[in-house]
Amino acid sequence: MQVYKKLQSNAKSIPLKLADRIANVEFCVFNSNIKMFEKYKAEHKLFKGMLYPYSSAETSVIQMWEYIEFLFKHGLKLN
Image (cartoon, rainbow, N blue to C red):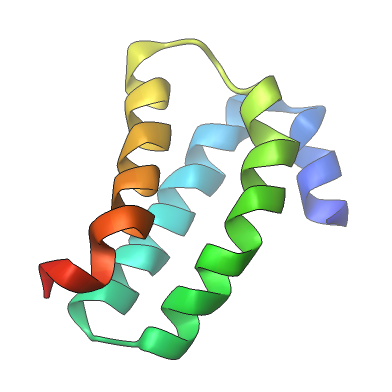
């Protein structure tokens, strides 16, 4: 949680953290790592709650948030 608080004060770094999280979730999906997928999914409410309000309103950042939501909704069905 401390990392998220630091990111809140540097909103320009949020897309990088979000891209990292997307890459980790994609890796779990494409390698059928259910344990880690479920860990990230369980953390997502806190992750989004702490960072989304501080995120840029740029279309690309909004699309990243939408994509990670898609991964959590459909992820393990994709593989």
